[in-house]
Length: 260
Image 1 (cartoon, rainbow, N blue to C red):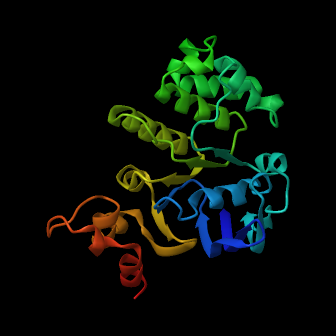
Image 2 (tube, rainbow, N blue to C red):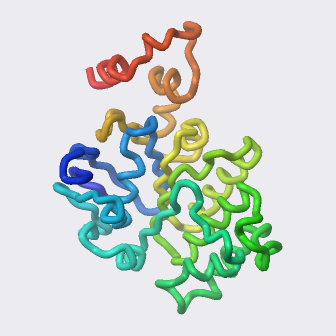
Image 3 (cartoon, one colour):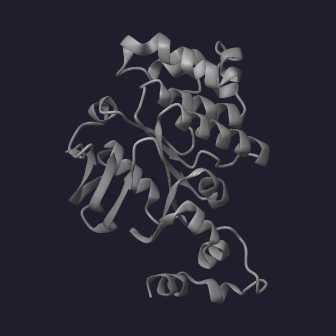
């Protein structure tokens, strides 16, 4: 199990971003982490994958654990070696490399399994096999997202952290990415899915957490979150009473209602 326990993160020694945040990703499950821009979702992923130093952030309290063993003080490569891999928002592929070269870079901690993992990725993403010699920067947005996910799988992770995989994609491609996430999970990889597309995320997750200003403000099975009136209104765009004015949906009113 991947666990985040009472995590507190500070940027530049002064900006408190995460405030005692706790959640878990059980083995073999998909867990959704939802929240508006600025809620702290990406910071959570950076804390788990050891990338806070790059952004002048520090964990000042709490732990990140895999099977009860703390990993939050390890270097990023060691965290990957423990089975935790992040696919960053915005794809972050090497645009000048070929598809095949991008995937091989992802195997830097697991060279012994390179060919086996390469076969797995090409089986999951047949379009990448067709494009394997093409320069990655010339791929479509959906193909680049598949490449980013495939590169993450090259380290054979137990836990795959996906940061906004549907961002900027057309609805048909979002459906394809959704189906691929389900298949990756079916093959045994646990997934922490950070998404603003709440409908997509909750449709495949077993459990969901909603963040606001660095805290978890709601924590329920995904099916229950889909039925929750506040989630429907503020994340799924559904409201039986008609459209509200912006004044009625201010952050503090939602937060007050959820925490009451």
